[in-house]
Length: 396
Ligand code: AMP
Image (cartoon, rainbow, N blue to C red; front, side, top):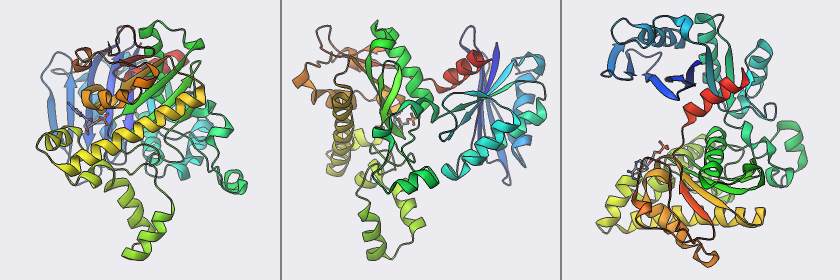
């Protein structure tokens, strides 16, 4: 099947056209600055030079039609006709408690996604705009919603409830949801296969360390706990997000600096994390360079990041009563050997040993633990688009 995968943001739209039989990405790209004075479409067809088109895109429907034109273009298109697209898989950030799996998009499903808008006000409305734009241009093509939160719906109440008055859960559904579910699901399955483990009888930990970062405990193929919570702000230290902090800090800063709640949320989401602590960058390439030049703040930010990862891994080993294999994935997890090495050093006590040569390899699945390590540790590159395409095909 040929599946168009759509990941729609408020002013951008990322896409990939994937042949699900060969796993081949036929084309991919991004529309940016939708709804602004001038936008642009970057289109990368497999086997051709990339194409960049500067064009005003009034709304997402115009952006989708630009993408469809690019895919069928005489010179750089990859299909002859839109009828070759068998299905569309949409990334949807929040499915609340309503969606524990991917689902075929119907009018009722759209209504149910709308009801989750409160939980992800920046993302879900944009995802819905993308769905509607595709529906109006590809009327008879089946569409599937794949939720970031769905994989985590198996987390038990002891792990998802916050110790607030229960009313807040009952009235507003305030609880841990978890995110990056498509990545955690895909990587945990690949990790089990790669390590020769039976996923249905395994204890795995997936460290998705990118600009956004989260860790998930996966027992017998099911998510049983994860580091992100009600929103993607909690848990690990991230590029610009603080991760877990004492909630009283919010009141303290508000009073000391005369800041509004909106300003403090901005500070926690956009000015904190590795960027805020290092005062260098949110990017680990810059942090590594600065550390090599002796920058102490960069060193501190790096160490705080690693330490938080260690605490979550340690906590999840305890809660699963063991671990068979650990995966590192996403931008930092796949590309930063020092992060992986430093994290694993903390687990020497339980027999984890790292092969330093293997740990230097990049860009593919690789076992970085030594053959005698008590727990297998691997780098498993994530591929959220391919996972969405596979979910779409499996559902249809
Ligand atoms: P993601 O959100 O998964 O796309 O990850 C993006 C992040 O990966 C960047 O902000 C960097 O911090 C990190 N990253 C990418 N390439 C490298 C690299 N070669 N070494 C260290 N970190 C990297």
